[in-house]
Amino acid sequence: MEITIRLNGKNVTDHIDADLLLIDFVRKHGCFSVKRGCETSNCGLCTVLMDGKPVLSCSMLAARANGHEIHTLEGLQEEAADFITFIADQGADQCGFCNPGFVMNTIALLREKPDPTDDEIRAYLAGNLCRCTGYEGQLRGIRNYLNSRKG
Image (cartoon, rainbow, N blue to C red; front, side, top):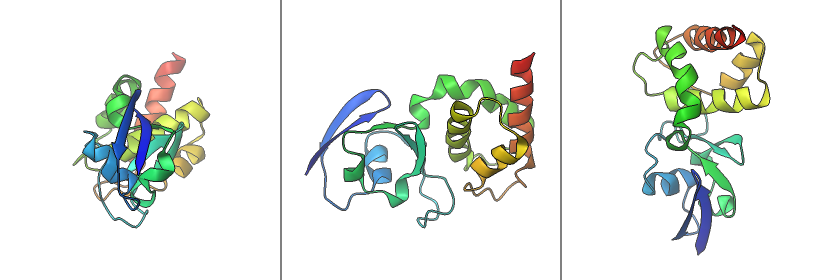
């Protein structure tokens, strides 16, 4: 079947098998920030934004994204650059493997709630598995970023 997805601002048309997962589609088209982790929709490493909302690409068929807009970290570098330094400054990216998922969910959170509470931040990041930290570094980094925007 043929599908067209707007991937990071560009229309991408491809012939796919009906059972192709979205993670495999975006990786085939050069979006290597989207990672395969648990393959059970529990770790958040495969998070992409579909029409601005975070989805787990390991549990979605590429055909379901036909006609939709998909963003990966490759397409959101400028938006992510502002707060990623704050997360790194907190030591929250020790190995860096989980960072793309955290960043994608943080972008979605800040678009929806420009000034979230700590509980709202925790709720948005709850689906991201990080084996290096206790998640407090990510929370502190995001909070420090939000405080810096306030002046």
